Image 1 (cartoon, rainbow, N blue to C red):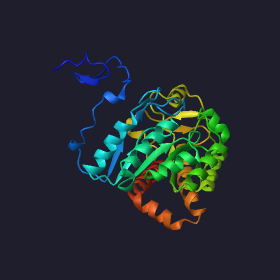
Image 2 (image 1 turned 45 degrees about the vertical axis):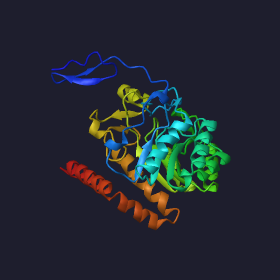
Image 3 (image 1 turned 180 degrees about the vertical axis):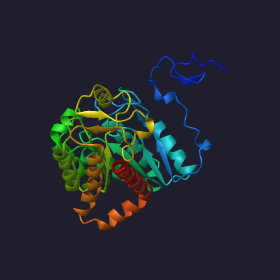
Image 4 (image 1 turned 120 degrees about the vertical axis):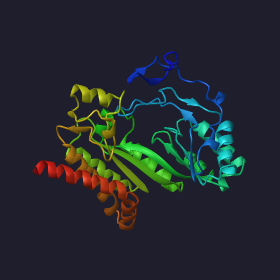
Length: 320
């Protein structure tokens, strides 16, 4: 059997056992990396680009899998890849998968300018993730003029105390301002929330649900907290802190919608799942968006069915 022990950054199996080699340093100059071999992938309407790696923020639920120090590719090389996907692979939508595309304002503006300079803004739609305290209306309008159609925000909670405990570094007014500015700029908005922060109660969860409805973004996702390895949440759950009960270490349970990894002393897993379902219903029904709710349910019908099967199995076990 081959010996891979000299390759830093590799996790592999040796005689059935998992071996984790020494860590590898982060690549500092991303421009020296070649363009991905897109020809090895099957055809798609949607392609993903990483224009940067790393996130400097310290949210307790995030693994920061690409490191804590932001490293940015040059705008020219980013748009070279963008153009290749449009002209050679006929992309209909390009998703910037950066944790925060708007982290460096001037860099984001440079990418937008390069896209417009090459006329690519008329050929493809694109999507990016922002952060509510790194955007302004001028930046958002420039993104829209360069072909961006949607922006996503990790809002997480509608309760300031929870945001503070999560080390999110944002506040309720910044969230409201960013969503208003995004809508005025003509962008569709996507919001991501988490139920089950340390110390979460039914009252704080309902604050988040009502807050999400009040923002009325184009779409919203409500996940249940997952104790991903390397996060502060995982460490707290292992120590039994934050009111957590760790239910499983099985990776198959590490899912924000269909998982079963974590619950709270104040909120059982079943109660969290009930709040999650209520969040989706409240979000659409409170805003009179019944057609959108029907479209959402149909689009997620497989997940909805799996969730129903999961609830029914639990009920049968409890009655058994």
